Image (cartoon, rainbow, N blue to C red; front, side, top):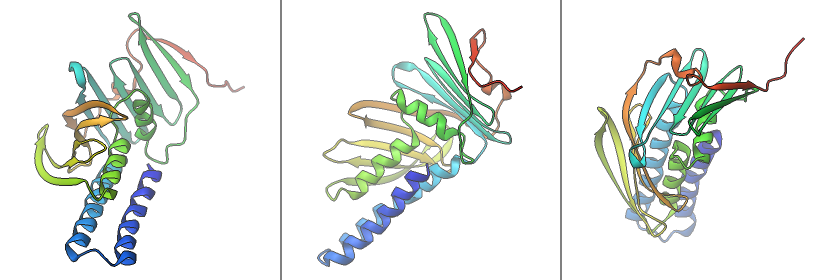
Length: 230
C-alpha cells in the first residue's frame, strides 16, 4: 500500500506540473484536472485508512459466489476467505488454505512484514486469484485521472447501509464504476480488471470481528512449515 500512496502523490504533482509547464490549458481545464487528482487522493486516502482499522466485510462475487475480509489491530491480523480458499495473516504466521476435491489443505509459513496493515498481504493473495482489491481500484482511478479523454462522473449512494462516494469512468481503455464507503471500504466495483469483466459488491460491514474468522476451516488438514526452535 505505501507504493500506491506514493503513486498518488506523484499523480497530484504531475497534474499540477503539467498545467504549469504547458501554459495552454484554460482555467476550466485546470479545474477539471485538479478535481480529478483531488477525487483520486480522497478515495485513496479512505481505502488506505481502512487498512489500519478493525472491521469485517462480506462481498458478493460474480456467479453468486461470496468472499469475506476480517482484520483487527489488537492483535494485528487479517483473514481473506474466497470460494476456493482462505489466507490468514498474523504476527506469528501466514496460513494459506486451498479447497480441492471436497478437501481443504492448509500450509503454515513464517510471518511477513505488514507495516501495521495486515490486510495488505491478504489483498495481494486475492489479486493473484483475479479478485477486485483496493490497490487495483486505486490503480484504475489513477490511470483515469491521467487520461485527458476520460469522462469521470461522481455520485453518492448507499451500499449495504453505508454511505459511499462513487465514480463512473468512461474511457477508451475500458469503462468502470467504483464506490468507496465513508469508512474507506470498497463498496462496489463493476468493469474490466486485467482485461476481464468482473464485479464485486459489499453485502455486510461491521466494526466487530469474531475471533473464529482467523481459524483454519473446519476439518482442514494443516501442515506447518515454520522452522522449529530448540
